[in-house]
Amino acid sequence: MFYIYCPHCEEHREEEEFHAAGEAHIPRPLDPENCSDKEWGEYMFFRTNPRGIHHELWVHSVGCRKFFNMTRDTQNYEILEVYKIGEKPSITSAAAKLPAQSKVQEGV
Amino acid sequence: MSDSENNQAFNYAASVDCIEQRPATERQITGQSPLHHADLGTVAQAQLGQTGTVQLTELKLLGHLILRGRLDNVGFTSGVKLTLGLELPGTLQMVVDGDISIRWISPDEWLVVVPGERSYEIEQALVNNVQGHCAVINASGGQTILRLQGEDVQKVLQKSVPLDVHPRSFPIGKVVTTVFAKTQAVISRTGDQQWELVIRRSFSDYVWLWLQDCSAEFKLVITEQ
Image 1 (spheres, each protein chain N blue to C red):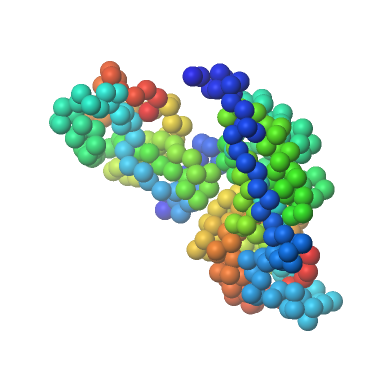
Image 2: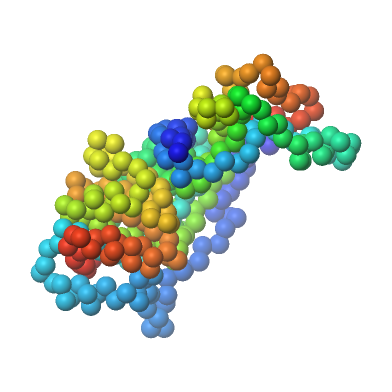
């Protein structure tokens, strides 16, 4: 079981109160009409599956019901960092490439 | 439009209709709590005068008003202060003044509990006093409150919730929304041995059965409000 720090409730809670909501930092293309099928498909369906540092979206579903981001090591399950939506992670791996920031939604 | 411009331009009171949700007494419709079928009144009469180590009281038919809004919206925070005479409590805090209480639910959500007969009047006052991007929702029919008091209540809670209820980490005045058995509850400590659970209407029977099972090894006594 994880013991997760909720940045909104400002205290640690049991994993039972949370739900993982997939990968973090997936910006929606600003002009979906003019996306190629490949671009839209990658936004919609394709996710990274890294070994090591991974940025995830979590929700405190039985609590404050707010979403937040978490940086977690997928090898040893260690939670390295928890930060609010719109903030940038301070711990990143060189291999974990964040999507290009041009022409996509800001603040995710 | 930025948030601040939106706050200026938006008149909340003009955008909502407030409806009296309590059953009309002139038509002889009486309100029933979600635990009406459990007939706690009769049990309480039978147990009159007994003191248990777990005492359960349903605080029924109160007004539950949910406030949504941001703390940086002055029109919202000052409107609430003006109406209720209470500041919105900070993270995981609860404030009580007489028969009105405010519980922190999330960074932009609070639960105001008021006497049932005053809920419509207070809801209207809130709607008229708040300004900007915010909301006042009457959820009175959707939930109820159970008050637990006694020396063994802490042990009952230890069986039911996945967090530390020791006074060291759960002092008086703290409120958390958490897992309670297989449902959820807004749990607050209102005294050294006194707790209040805000539970969902549809789960009230489950919680009532759970509490009976949970308190089987202690002495559960039902008392009237």
